[in-house]
Amino acid sequence: MGRCRPIARPAAARVGKARGRGLGSRGSSAMAAEKPVVAVTCTAPVNIAVIKYWGKRDEKLILPINSSLSVTLHQDQLKTTTTAAISRDFTEDRIWLNGREEDIGQPRLQACLKEIRRLACKRRSGSPEDPLPLSHSCKVHIASENNFPTAAGLASSAAGYACLAYTLARVYGVESDLSEVARRGSGSACRSLYGGFVEWQMGERADGKDSIARQVAPESHWPELRVLILVVSAGKKLTGSTVGMQTSVETSPLLRFRAEAVVPARMVEMARCVRERDFQAFGRLTMQDSNQFHATCLDTFPPISYLNDTSRRIIHLVHRFNALHGHTKAGWPARVGSVSLRFIRLRGPTGSELWCLVTLNAWFQVAYTFDAGPNAVIFTLDETVAEFVAAVRHSFPPESNGDKFLQGLPVEPALLSDELKAVLGVDPAPGGIKYIIATQVGPGPQVLDDPGARLLGPDGLPKPAA
Ligand code: DP6
Image (cartoon, rainbow, N blue to C red):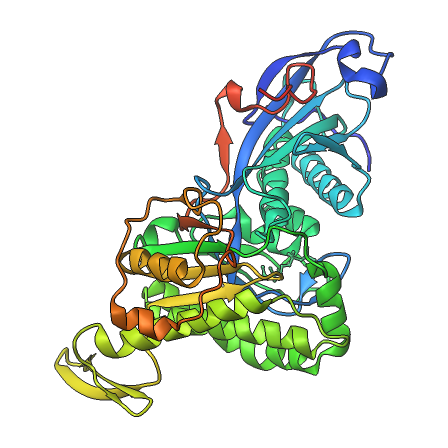
């Protein structure tokens, strides 16, 4: 790549001067003069897919075999914070994750850096002079931190790479779509570039230019929606997503069927559920898609199982909870055998209303989804959270951290009816769930203006831990 003119002054702050001694043992001793350091700090959210991405059609460009749709979680509970700083005095790119220096040579990090510099270069060619003497060719120092356990199976790489893409874009003055930059780090990361409800369109082009994320609805769209993360295990998973999906693509006929014959219609239906805030259909489809994803994992050869006994107990708990509410909540409907009867209101084309008695397989108050690990993510509505959390406590009594068992948004204590206790069964599994994080739908990446939030000091090195 040829040299470009200096980049435009980004939404970034000059934070000071890079000094030779500040770069430590790996630093340069050849710095002739003090040059400005430009730094930006941003945060980005975790997202949870309700229509799952599993399988790539291009491993290098990270292009998926199917589209996917996710919910962005609120950064008050789960977020990555990243500071990126550039200076002519930096002699090499460097990165620190959660305080530890990591290898910047990792191919996915390199792909993100290369792509952002390509975009920065493209943007500058042909635009007017800029006073800031920094360009895409400047080396970058990056520090990144999660406010949740990295290996807890909570999509940390999605938040991490989205934050990296967003922060680098600001520091290098890039304003174009960042799907490709984030995607080259981790496929699901492109969905964390937006708040609310986000789809990643798989695209058809071989160069991936049409494989982009876009918002389906903003975070304010469905304020009653709540998310509970039931942390079953904070350990690292046995089979990572990247390797897992590669084996699935190579060996699972079910995965191919899913991508071609099932997901396209599900994408349309899920977007409708979100637009119309139809929790019944949203909950059902979320659970069905999670189950199908895990079925493709079992169809993979050798099989992959991400769920454990506790995950399966959670699935049963959700179905029992739903079944009880399906025939008691409103006093009506009634239950005949295994079928629930319910009145629903239909609206005709002329606006006339008609009440019909219908049979339902189930009535959904709560839905689960599982990614590549045993932790459950539960979707429900505000009015159901307290009772469901009480049901979880009943089925999985906290072992030692009773006071820290529930984290995040406050949840009122609730008493369980004897009927619900009976339905939940008599076989509690103490300690099965380590803790719960209660959260909601949240916004996309943010720029932090507060200098106190920066993870790098004026010398471009990580600030010492407070
Ligand atoms: C099960 O985005 O982590 O969470 O693109 O190889 O980095 P790579 O995979 P990754 O896969 C996420 C898979 C999933 C489903 C989803 O988030 O859509």
